[in-house]
Image 1 (cartoon, rainbow, N blue to C red):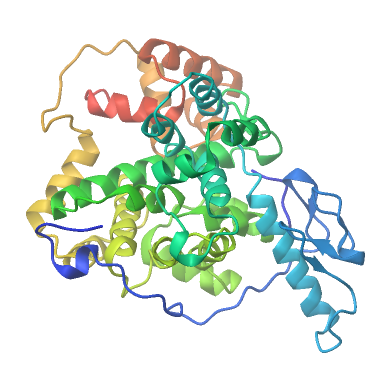
Image 2 (cartoon, rainbow, N blue to C red):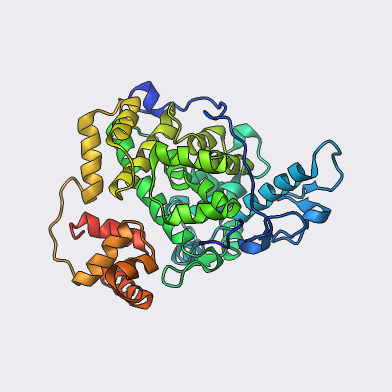
Length: 418
């Protein structure tokens, strides 16, 4: 965990794939920042008077990306406590932008960028499987753009940024290794990546059932739908334990966030997306994916998120799933196919019965990973040390020919081994 800082559709109903206009969040909330003096990754300090990663200080003005400053005394009408909270929020949002990429994904992208004539679609295929890479590309592509020129899909973003500039950006990014952890970020990057990819996959399945043809923005929205949780973890120390321990999903989890912290991760994600100047439709899908009246891509992402939590035995009630499906115009048979396909990760609609190369212990470790447990929790469940769990993971990745836990879980599910 991080250092605590105390689309068009051919057949679907209009409501399924028509993005609702921008509007206020369903519940009027404002962040209640309670932490004082703790540190965020990248040198950001959560309280006034400390520094951001770029060296600017809260005591004499925080430098925001793009050169803006918040200077002490600039507005005598703002109370010091309110100004401090604003500065803290600015620092946390900037810290999220330094969220690390998976080392293998970053290296694959750099290798592809060095090849002459590499297609933008090939670059995009790598980028849109990693949240940090996706954030970086979208921020750069939309920097300084007028609203009508902004992009929310990775292929046009890659084309706008260009290979040379993208290579510079990626080389400067932090990265994490699944077998060595996320450094100052701890287990958060790995856990975030797994849930993001599973939700992206579920959203694709829902869009397929609904007949949605244009899914590029949906792929980005589903990958980044929980980016607000990263900011929440930096703002609220207790949220880290909630994120890595309690397993509540869907509307119940969001209500708990609003009750405990005064804000939910959807709103925080919307703040981040608008900070990056992405088109309103993408920010809307990220911000409102848990709203009871969500429509279009926000509703698809919300249902996908609930399906992933449901599969992990989180506290998502069946009536929540069916209500979300009904709102999209997804019938029961379609929902059952998605649930069944998600549980078995069917390839081409057929479960393949193949010989499993994993030992019984390796299968148990992989199953626990799929449930969202971290190394120490798995070790405790199996009665072994964390180093033994890491050895099992290293062997699993080698046998399956994959590079991370999300790929391993998806592959093993698809072949009926879990």
